[in-house]
Image (cartoon, rainbow, N blue to C red; front, side):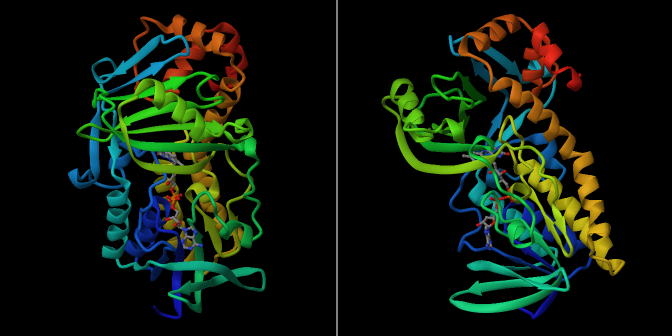
Length: 392
Ligand code: FAD
């Protein structure tokens, strides 16, 4: 480890690794630090991604793809099923990843591009000077060190502290955090070609249950519910009820718990000498909770802007505004639209969800994403269409 780098990236998730790779490929000296001893482990993710978007960042590799999904089956509370299949959509769907291997592969790409990667290295604070972030205070194997940089990229995930240290408000209310629990299960007997979604306030208040195939007879079975709905009964209790009824003989091999920010865009993701990316910048999708692709997109933009800023010797917020503008014009627009849909969706009773599902029976979908399905749901209902008119 040197004493000074152009860029220090805190966190080696998808956002951090893509940011580090992009900046290193441009010729910047980059240090990426990760507090865990193994990148990608433990997993806190259902591991589903869109194929098309993933390919923008990395060539698919069978070593980290567990399932190649052909469609989705979505169930309303009364059991009405809506199926979206590849043949209907005429396009590609998604992969279910093995993130323990995927995240490491992304970090490897950044190392190959020239970034220095250090695991078991935790950022404990920021170095600041004249109102600018100038580096990171870190702890590596019990030893404290200060490392200076021209820019810091905060990619430290949902529990991010980097933003707060830089004076950015990243606080999340319980109502804006999806609390999740997930079991890796064997013996569910699901069709490995499909992802399954179960809706309904009885089983998952203001959220949903998912089942994503993981190859052979494995599946990620998980739940996300809004934090303010988690009273005496927690997400994991709802999930236990669901699997107890649906898969009484299946076995639980792993348990993951975690949170997904569903607050929509925060006001500011930059400070002098600093950019926030991925979950740290609350860039996950408010309705699906998906954040891998957005994290990678934001990481790429941040890596590019880091290069432009350092080349012009200007890392002030007026220069880094470029990052703010670019991500808001791309993934930010999707996030804002999703937030509008989510806010409408969480007000539905189970009866209303059932009636929307009935109104969709026989509809052919032209696209495969959950969000398109939800748009179709809303289009089939005049009142909803009016409530959500800004989206269409
Ligand atoms: P992370 O992947 O969280 O990476 C942040 C990294 O920073 C971590 O490795 C962490 O150890 C490190 N770090 C934190 N603090 C420090 C520090 N002080 N110093 C050094 N390192 C630090 N998204 C999808 O797209 N599809 C899904 O199917 C999906 N399912 C999900 C299911 C669950 C249960 C949960 C909780 C989330 C799910 N997500 C899903 C969301 C997705 O996991 C995140 O959006 C994504 O991982 C964000 O990437 P990131 O790089 O911003 O953060």
